[in-house]
Image (cartoon, rainbow, N blue to C red; front, top):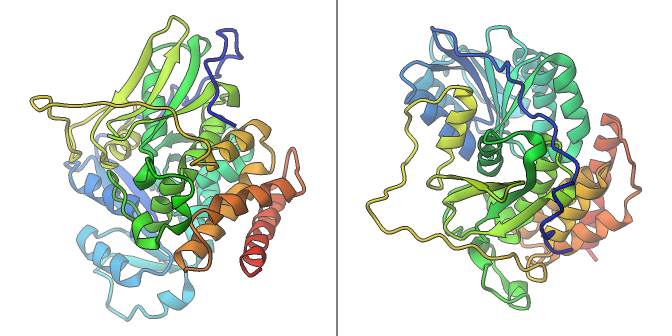
Length: 411
């Protein structure tokens, strides 16, 4: 399915998104928990905290098994808590390895408990993949303001997550550059004035490659992104444009937006991060260099804005902005994203799990680059669809989808 053409102005209106009562910053600064602190978003978040002149303080850092990296971060940041969710990795941390005043907690249960600590003001959810769902739900259950970088949380369980946030008075603020841009642009009008939300995509390293030539893409080629510096999983998702498929689903739930009002445009420079079209024909775009520190800081400081360490656009130099429609033949993942956003239910959880396993298989040399979207399509088509899955249903389908990809990869 190609990206939808402009829908009529009478399409169903978008409901309100972020509550207007988002907490203001206390005079003494905000205590921040960084979940996934050793990943690309986590390290950028720590740069934002370090450059905040005391407005934000690292209170808790969490990682799964990257012990050396999180110990180095702990000595730099001096948080109250370090959480390592892999018990085997945590067992390698010797006595005295942490700085004075920093305590160690071990396991996912400990993380669930600590993110609910009243001392924590904002939680940055930056654990990559399905693994980030559990701790995000724990933070929302506690009514926290969550800066969400883990798109899989909403892809897998969008309705459940949004209902929980509403019931607990929690606030979700997007950290993905595209969704942060949409959030900012939506402030230019009312929800019933929105005609279309347009997510921009860089097109990745294979924007001009033929579908046939993509069958021989190597791991090294796929990991060379032209504009962004990201972890390997997200970089491969950008190369297949599955990241944009998942972002369509995320936008569906985050902004309460029907699938027919969502579109994608390829913008190779990655300067315009997304756009919102209004009923009068006005299009609001948010611009900035491809630097994740800007949306991270916006999510931390919202509703205020502050100076920070993010790069700035230099308008004394020439600036070119190109836009082109995505090629659904070259990038079939986009069709899957539109389909999953439109059907809802269990589709997002199944697509996300299949993609995570397929990307792992490609990085391990077990399948071809083009097999990623093909396997995801097959799993999505063959799963037992559920219109309103429970959290247990989502977890079961997550396991099933991964097993199906592994089974087909061995054929």
